[in-house]
Image (cartoon, rainbow, N blue to C red; front, side, top):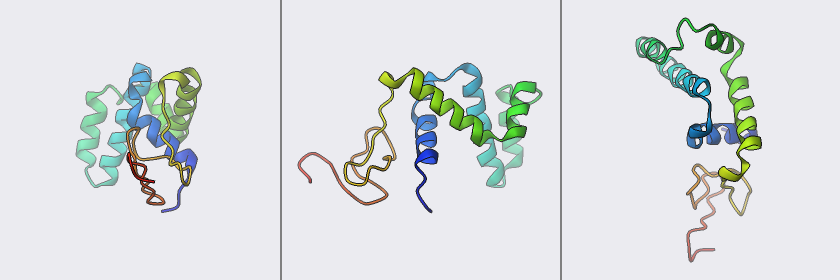
Length: 120
């Protein structure tokens, strides 16, 4: 899979900084989980998730889902980076500059560089 910095950054923000999101944005995070469940062949579980988290029959949520959740996720990530820059640490590999898998990661899944203490 090719690396795309915008997609990697969006995923990273959604995975690790959901606490900075509004309640509605957090609901839409459940919509993302639901989408993944549906793609994995678990439509019944996806439907339960949507109902349980108040996404079903929510006109605002349905509008975002109809437009595409990816664009919404990117907008939220950019907003969080602007409004909470001092609270968000984007961990980038010192060798290739790509985003690491987690804020505490010390090895790059893209290039294999390891920056654990004592290693170069």
